[in-house]
Image 1: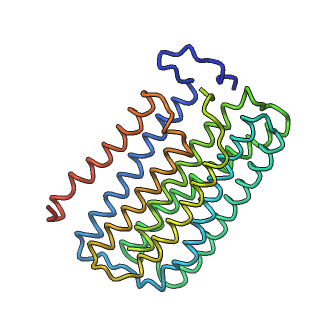
Image 2 (image 1 turned 45 degrees about the vertical axis):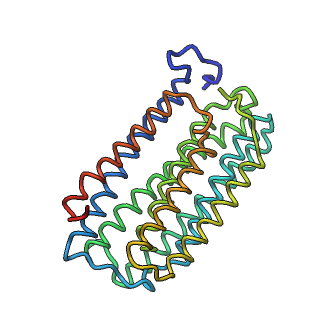
Length: 193
Length: 92
């Protein structure tokens, strides 16, 4: 928890931060593997049929993209606040991030429900199975982020963070921005192309 | 480590750029540029947005070399995976 002050590692990077980056590097390969198999089948399979654009719900997905981008900003502002010593700001921005994360999941659930009713299901074809696999994998990451940020919020309310000790806020931020980054890639490949 | 200047204005600027690029990519997807060009444009915008998030929100810009090696290494391997599947698709 206090590893903002531990700088005597051989890389000069605190262990927690290095660990988070190693985890994110493995996540790049996880999503990279899924996305490349999506590209192969979408481009190469005669059985891959793309649903008409009206069924994809572009406006709602665009709104969700804005929600997630905004949550990334509130997360980085939370770190900015605690670095300046404002615990109040930290609590406020973490709460906003949590709220936006729940909004994202709510909109996603509404979208799933509608797509399912319109006939895009897990077994309706290759598009459906890739769409649900990848967006649900992403949604699981959002849920993971909600757990992490809730923990930070609880600790912040107990006064555990200040301008010197806030390493975990930074690590959670790295994770949350990565979740945003993945969505930035998923959004065009599933909705716009 | 946390010596990087906290810079609220920069974060808000990046946010504005990301919001603009999101609107731009949705708008561009309705243009009929030809399939190849539409895909290239959407991916170029996505790449630019990813770079902005990584550089400013994840502070990759001011990060140490070990972190650069880790993240760019993984990104390079993912790119290699894409390049290796291209011949299977009959693409160049």
